[in-house]
Length: 281
Length: 293
Image (tube, rainbow over all chains, first blue to last red; front, top):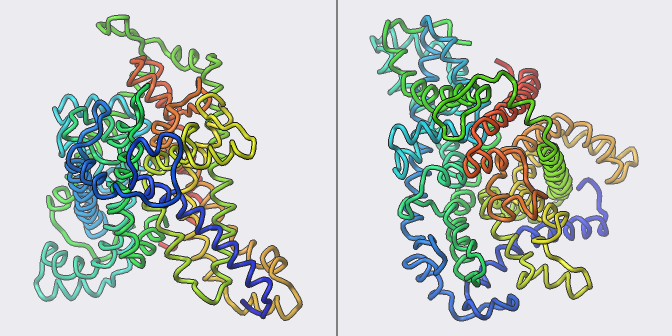
């Protein structure tokens, strides 16, 4: 603040605290609900913690709920982790390779490649749901980790980010590498990769969140409970028709579903903000 | 576009772009082309043969009152999400930029919801507003307001907008705060010396300087509301009650995947593609000016 205005300072903090309440309240209620038994929650949610916290988490991880198709979330967490890591690593690898090709080589189909990559920006899964599903079915990739990961790893934004970064790498480095007799692959491995480390880390954080939080894609390609990811699996727990929803277990699953990505954001706050701002540029 | 100094190798660049190209062509270009082709075809009842029908699918789509309803829902939903997110995020960012104490704590605590998937946010807010036991639904009932989004379409729309906006506020907050922190302090101090209070300083100095960020966020928030909120709709309302919260992306899924109306679903996909292409073009036109190549 530029000048001292105690009343204004008070107002500022009041608004921020209100913002924090809106941010944290849903999580608090979810945590509290995940510590009670199902019957306690039927008429309303108490505002204090109950005694079933560990029972609920153990049950939801190992057994799942009584709702049809609501499998244990332990395997779902593993599927989510495999999918998120696979997508993050896959996107980084294929993007950095194609950015290297586009920036450091001149070849006849360069512009065609560039525009094809660009076109993926305009074709999110949501606009080509059925035909993409058919391709996956034809390749018999339904209910496989490969099917969850590979179709999502083409990335225009990551490719552009690396391209942008490579353009700022001084030409002298290429010349020096050449004089020293290093070929393109050697240059890539010993010069570009080490220089890209921060960018890769920042991108990794963003892409991990992207992969973990996918919903529509796993909904389309998995029908086998053992292949569900947690973000899409929760829906099964609350879709019980006329039965009583086991909200305590559903909320425990929701907490488990958000824990890994939230932990990544909190622990890697600086990389996360850098990644977010750079990717969107 | 590329370096002046390049390597020479006849086959290596192709090998390097091969994985990206393979994934792009098999999972992006080919399905999109299929959707385009399908949108001009009508299949018979058994799916055995199909007939080329020019623009019949599109004509059927645009003369269907249900499709207009879905478009209006989508417009309401997207504008609602964009406005709620941006107003709240800008307010919080201006306040967080102004405080001396606890800036980093506020920043950390306000940014983490970005990590929560829209579908999970949907489940959390559904639980808060569940008519029979939701904390907020019961609180509203005690003050005499009857909440039941399973019956009331407007309440259902308000609920999906809230659930979709909640994790998104964090994203907008990060961008606004970064933009505010890049405003030179001297400008704000000069305004203060000239006698401008906090409100005046905001509207005359800070807000105009935020306009590029604001414009960028409007576009990306619309993209988010159009395409990335499927999880919210699917977990919270499934488009209901009736079709009160059915948005374009949800209808493509419903008609294509559940209703198996291939021609109409493909035509809807093509309409969505046109929308994304439009939004992406706006986004890139603006970014071209900002980024130096």
